[in-house]
Length: 98
Image (cartoon, rainbow, N blue to C red; front, top):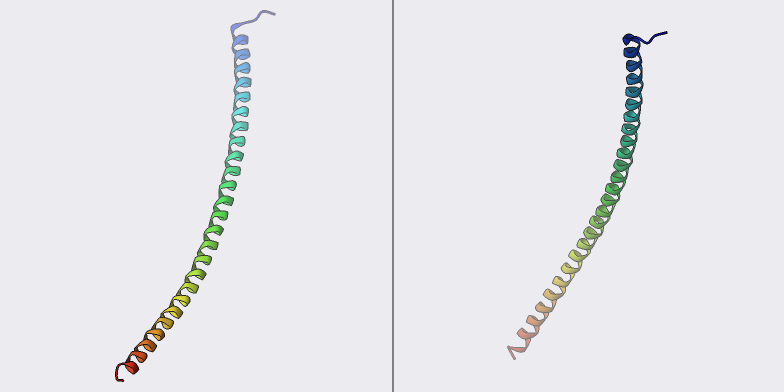
């Protein structure tokens, strides 16, 4: 059975389609692997962002509690200083008329 040019054409088309199918399947495999890696990276970034948000919230809570305490302490100190000044003025007024 002699091989004609038509047979050679069909054989080359079959081989090229098999190679193309193999390359497309490899491309699809690597695309799926890349998407999976992107999903894992996105998940890790999301977890770290949530951890960062928790740290910022804790810091905000502690600073607000500290600010509230500092405000109360400063008001108390101001009242003590004002009381001491008033008492000192009272003593000076008692001492001067004598």
